[in-house]
Amino acid sequence: MTGELFVRRGGSQGPTLLLVHGLAANAEVWDGVIALAQRCWPGRWIAPDLRGHGRSGASGSLPQASAGLRLGSSGPAAYSYSGYAADLADLIEADSPVTVLGHSMGGVVGLTLASGLFGVTVERVIGVGIKVDWTEQEASRMALLATRPPALFDRRDEAIARGLRLAGLQGLVAETSAAATAGVIEDLVVADELVGDRAVGNRRGYRVAFDPAVNGIGPPPMQRLLAAADSGVTLACGEFDPMVTVDQLRALHPDCVELAGLGHNAHVEAPELLWETLLARPSDRR
Image (cartoon, rainbow, N blue to C red; front, side, top):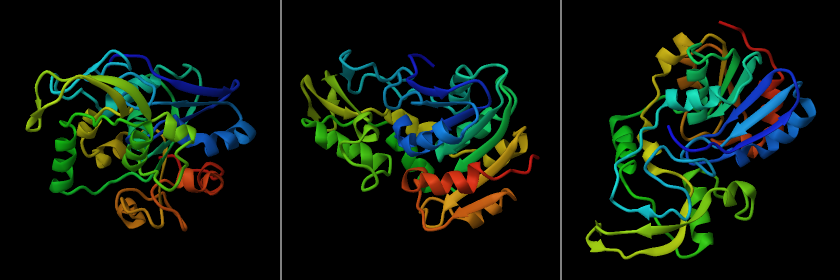
């Protein structure tokens, strides 16, 4: 993978709390959890924008802002759970034990990092809202979305609204919040081919700071990841999460938690409840 990663950091010497956001989001969704970590975590914390998200570089198909985005001129970038895990391993001090708190896709990346193949010591993975059951139609739809160019908007607020919808954050964070504004970038679209059934000329506008090719990462191999994890693992989901149920999680793993009254973005909806329920409780190490 290429390009620089944007990373938020804090804390001091001690165990590392690694916060990994989900699909189409960015590190700012952890604001509530970070506020708690600054008071309660006995070490350092790290919250990156994953590659192809927010302020981090893409994996090849999307250049940085102002470099010009060429519609229809390149295929999907190569994103993978192992590629993301390798990125994150580079951020961690070699002697620091790690607890990963990952949301949705970020939880899968955390499980991948816990395999022991990336040179870091993961003591615990907490995966929140991981979608574990996929139909063929759902997987095919995501693969199709990975081939589509990003939409360009004339107005910044239009791009912000789209970004919040893609990340499932509409109605949960303000359009002026850091999570919303970090998810948009101004760019130049260079179109020298047909887009759909019409030619589109060069123009500047706003797009969601998310590489659509990430949609092609594919359903996670949960059974294999759980079997390989050399760490304690807790799987959790909101009571009203439309992506996953606690029964689906329990079919895969014994240490599962249902977060009462919450939906898919529990870390945004109720960071205090998430902290007290998941980070303040021990996990049975496999």
